[in-house]
Image (cartoon, rainbow over all chains, first blue to last red; front, side, top):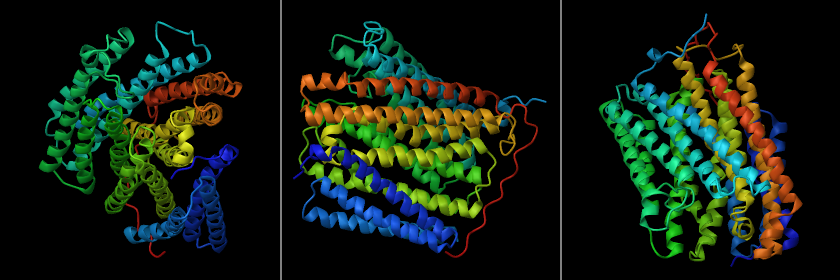
Length: 97
Length: 483
C-alpha cells in the first residue's frame, strides 16, 4: 500500500512538504490580514497562496506515490484547509462579540 | 531605589510555584550541559569514554528536559490556582511535601544515572538503577513516586476548584491532570512482545507530549492571555475548548506515526499518515486567531518579555511541530528518516517552540508579581538583557535545528535510502563530511544557546529590580464588531 519515495525524489519530497506548510501559513496569514484591514489585494495574495498550496499538495502526493482513493482524500483535505481560515475567522468574530 | 524579590507579594500557591520554577531553571541548565557533552562526543568519541558515556549524557539531557518542563507546568498551575479558584489551596502542605519528595527523587535518580550508570540487567536494575525504556528511564521506585506526586497535584487542583470557584479552565485542567497521571501508567508494565511493549510505551511518549502537555499548555496560555493582555475570560475559554477539540481530533490518532515501524498492523500506516497531516490544523487556527486578536487589542500589555516569549511560542510551535514535523511524518519518507538526526532536529525546535518558550514566558509573569507588580512594559530598565536572551536562545536553537536537519538528511539518504540501513552504511553516514560538519556547527549554536541561558537566568534574577513604576491595572479588551 505504501510505496517509499524514489531516490531521485528524496530532496523534492522534503521541499514539497515544507512548501505545503508554508503555503498554508501564507494563505492563513494573508486571508486574516485581508479581513483585518479590509484589503482586497491581500485577499488576492491569499488566493495565490492557496493556489501554491494546491500545487504543492499534489506535487507532494505524486512524490509520495499516492494513487486512486488517496487522491480523493487529498482533495478533501485541501478543501478543508481552504475553508479552515474562513471558518476560524468567523468563529473569532462570533466568539469576541 | 531597588525592589527586592519579596515573598510577601505572593500567596501560598505562588510561594510553592516559585520553588518549582527555581528547580526548573536549574534542570534547564543541566539539560544544556549534558546536551553539550553528548554533542562533543559526536565529534570526539573518546571524550569522557568510560566515565560519562554518550548514552548517559543523552539520557540525562533528555530526562532533564522532560522534568524541567513538567516542573514549569506544575509551578504555573500552582501559581494561578488560588486566584483562579478564589480560595486557598486545599492541600498546600501536601503540595509542599510533594515538591520535596519529587525533587529528592529527581536528585537521587540523576545521581544514580551518573555514578552507578548500569546494573546487572535484572529486576534490581529495573527497580533501582534504570528501567531501560528510552526517555522514561527512571527506575520503578521513582516511577511510583512520580505517579504519587502527580496524584497529589491532581488532588490539590481538583479539590481546590471543587471547594472554590469552578471555571472553564478549571474543568479542562482537572480532566487533563487525570490523563497526565493515568497515561504515565502505560509505561510501567512489561510484556514480552517488543511490538506490544513499544505500542504502550508510545502512549506515554506521544500522548503525554501531543495531548496532555498541549492541553496543559493551553490552560496555562489561557490564564496568561487574560493576565497579560486583558483578554476576556469568555473568549479564552471558548478558544480553549476549540483548540482542545482540534488537538485531540488530530493528535490522539496522530500517535500512529510512531507505529509505522514497530511491528504494528499495516493499517497504522494509513491512520498515522492521515491524522499526522491533520495535525497542522490547530496551528493554522492559532495563526488566524492570533491575527484577529492583535487587531482587537493591538497587543497592549504589561509585561513585554512575557509577551515576546508568547510570540516566540507561536512561531516556534508552528515551525518546530508544524513544518519540521510534517516534512518527515508521512510513511513514504518516514521509512528513511525515523530515528535519524532529522527526528532530533524536529525534537529540538518543537520542544523549544511548544514548551520551553511558554514556561519562560510564565517565569517572567511570576517575577513581575514577586517584585510587587513592578512595571515590565516599555522603557524597562535593562531591557537589553531579556531581548538578547530571547535572541541568543532562539538563534542557538534554530541553528542547532538547521545543523541537525542537514545531518539528518545526509543520514536518511546515505545510510537508509542508498545504503539500505546496513552496518557499513551506518558508519559511512556517521563519518560523512556533511554529518561531521553539521555536528561541529551544532556545537557552535549550542554555545550560543548556553550564552542565551546565562543571560536569561541573570535577567530573571534582576529584571525590575531598579524599576520604580508599578504595572498598570488591566482594562478588559473591547469586542471587535463585524467581520
